[in-house]
Image (cartoon, rainbow, N blue to C red; front, side, top):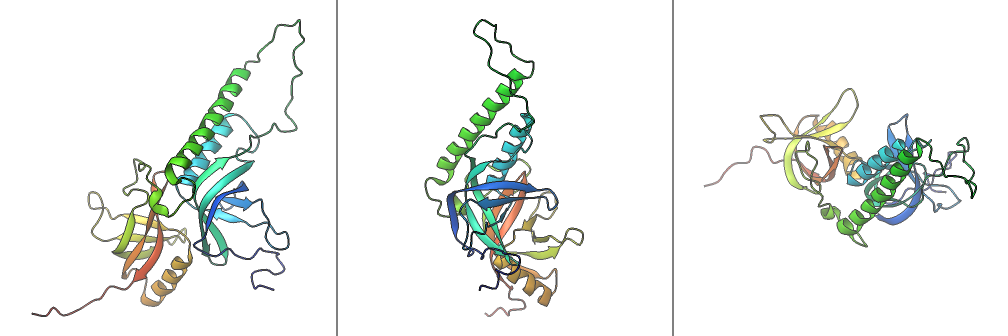
Amino acid sequence: MPSDVGELRRAPLLREGGFLIKVEGEIERNARLGVYVYSPLATATGGIRRELILLPSRGLDDLVRLESVQSTAKRGNPIAGVYEVTGRVLVFQGRNFLLPEAIVPLTRIENSPDEKVDSPPQADAEPAIAPDAAADTEAESEERDYAAEIDARLQERIGAVPRSLDVLAAPPAETASLRAGTRFVQRRGRVVRDPGSGIWRFVLEGDGRKGDAVSLDLLPCLELERLIRRTRQAGVGRPVLLSGVVTIFQGRNYLLPTAVQQPMEGRSIGP
């Protein structure tokens, strides 16, 4: 039996680097952890449902905006339903994460059992519209329009099959200093850890606006595991050369690390 399938009945991990392409699944918000969890409808070996934590990205921005639209419609669970998800699979500390490029709703949210459903009007009766009916109809129309917008963005942004994160060509959020899809190639900086939240960040050297250093939260992946081990061995705050891809979520930059090197210090310069 695989090591990651034990008494807790956890599904075997998906390998890092793979892509889920338009895979149907359910999404729930874990209020305790403050994350969105995606569960593909297709089960793993033994009928176990997988769970992947969604990472900050333009795709997650789509979901949060949709959640806001559905909350306006006064539904019980704003994001309950089936979605078609495209994204990159990552692994960190024994569990799977997903960097979503697109999240498209496939089913509309049904009325809760407690909601009263009015019977249809009689043929000889004047149809009456409750005061909130127009608002509900407008909210539902906005939800449908937004679902169509997401689908159009999916086709424009990644087409039928996404090839890499370079396809994230949407304009950056106003408060983000770096564009989504920006690639770092051996950028010099320092890896630090927030003592309060425990989040690892990469602080660029020689960048920033008005003298402020640019700091990016590092997204969980196998390369981050290796980076954390090397940082603890060499000492937190020591300079490194880091490669990776920038994402944006709600106006904030994040970095998915792909490779790290130690800078060569003290090299002599020949004639």
